[in-house]
Length: 452
Length: 155
Image (cartoon, rainbow over all chains, first blue to last red; front, side):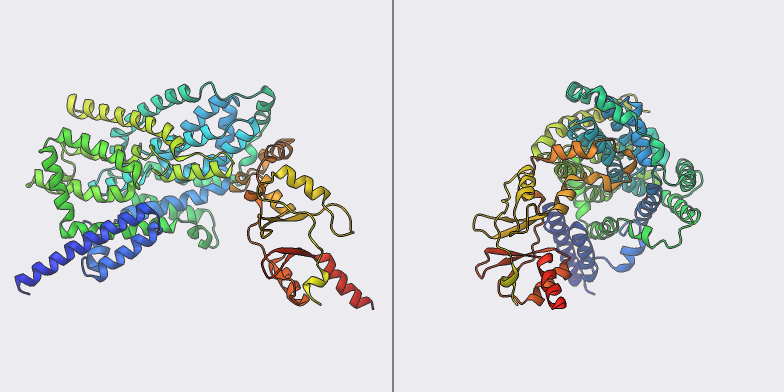
């Protein structure tokens, strides 16, 4: 092939990939076509046009589908789906409400903390789906407005999910690309999330502290409930909890064991399926959120295409020009830009695009480093943490910023107390600014001032 | 026999703007031909007498019963008087948001067999009859179809 044809075909590839990528993004944002359909079709288009070949899409780490992410997601979904029918989550919710002495504001605080903690280990949407039914029941029992509980549930789940590798898809994706381990997230992100949660509780005390009141008589309804009745299958529960503990220990030790998080989770899922004596896994497997999984698959392929044709490289050069190689400025830019982007668009496509962009930027700054030296360069680390914090926390700002928010707004409408877009923002934006500002301060102090 | 031969003219109906409380009162006091007082379902009409929904006992049950109960296994966490409390709070909701919007109808000169077919296929006990212009003109009840059958059997 002469050089002219190569240039033409690569120019065609560049524009085709860019066009597919941008149209896909646009369609996903506009929500006119379901995002999974957009992603799957986009991936197909990219492959059929030869921009990426199938081998690159299926088998290459840098350009293709990140199977680590895919199998970690699937495995955790399976484990949770087995755990759900045991009734443990209903038990936790009712017990917490009683622990809070059935006082409405205390319940709000306790439920927010529980949501945040659960969300650090399960995905945010699942956590919200597990906590809201009982929340609504309790709100009905106490005759209080369920809206503060619903909004707080969404906000707390997004904050809590930022704390660990498995808490939020952006973290899972960053961990996979940057080869960061579970403990790295605990060591670097959990501290700031704890600080943010503490400030969050103070904030909700200011907002809702005085507005949630009920009568003693109504409180008795809750205090009389027997949370033990929630446990439907205590044998399965014991097995599932043991496997979950095993999986968590596995996550903590995974880099020492030289095993990827997906391996740990997959092993746990297989073990639990075996122990649960499931006769036919059809039903359990059907409950895996395949639209989400295929969305990831399609997205990875489309992003791989724009990485290959050089769009990402170009974008990262622009970013370098903007910050002139000042890494502190870069991390602040990434933090705040990610927060704003995450408030408007789904953080998953955003992070999927940012990951190769940051890697490319690192390659431009340190052209002689490769592998882990490059990915986990001491000066690059704060940028990864900025991306994680911005992308996860930014979603709280608007009703569409995170899936958990969308779910909660849907429930509010079903419960007859709709939350308007602006009303959600009235709570979400201040909380987001607060949490991102705390993150900015944390990053500055920890990585640039004191440096540890 | 045609639909218009066994249908009962509609005397009472709801609008989407009615509250649930008003609907309940009407359900209690509506007349069904000469057969008595109280019906289990009413048609919901728009300003042009076109049928846009049906409100039945079942629809009300579904609306009052909290949706979150079915999301998880919360049967053990109810309290005495829960249904009454929730029912009271639901009284101001609008018929328009609770009614079934998928209405199966028959034209006035539809043969009886077609009416029965529709009732069986969609498992409904009352079938609205509409004119050519789409206006509601009567209702066919399961009882009245049954009456035709018994009359034929016993003759």
